[in-house]
Image (cartoon, rainbow over all chains, first blue to last red):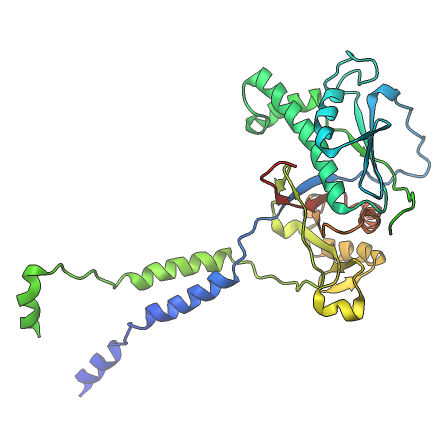
Length: 183
Length: 158
């Protein structure tokens, strides 16, 4: 009797194991979200201390002014512009190296000033940010190809620093203004 | 029975053993269990992020705090209207709550990790910049300077 009992209990039917596992698997398959969070990373400037002296004025030729109004229209260096042109214009400004008198002296001195209205749409704002960043990325890639024969992203951190010193990314966002319009 | 099988063996391929099927399935199961991230906040705002090309991956998800901005979801439109709102954790908030939110997020982390904390702004395309600017100003005040505008990858041209 004892003998038969042990044999009985040792024999659990494992046939439904696969079904149970499948059930769980399907549950996790459905609930899984595989999306990786991506986005444009920026660093905000710290709040200036109240007793800080105003920074020395920059030479006007070294500042690339980009304004976006409440109707999502662009004003670049005082002229109406289009988002499709922005990247090339920015690149020309940054990589000017003193050639054209109203563009930058050199990339180290060049600053991009971006100002938007409170009524600007977020989509447009991201587009502009993206184009400005893209201009820097392309210039850095060109420079790194020239120097190291590789893309900027493939360089070691020391080499990247080298390139960053040639093309420091200076996108400055002006303190917000309410110029009226929407919102 | 056994006799029958033996007879047929000549013109029939042997069956594939399914004994390892549970193991395979379990392996898959564990993979998905480990990679699953349960969504802990239920969204009260509709967020359709814009797309961009200059995107970076957000690393170290445990150090990221999320701020959602967008118009309320359809079910909440009758009570909250369509004006974009800020959502922190599970509830609507005003811009004055952001400082406290960041403070709480910091307390939940290790002291050494605080400088690496990032705030991810998940903002709907149609939102006006006014509200985003307010949020950015609040973040500056509490010195949470690393931010990330959540965007999707764009494949085509502008």
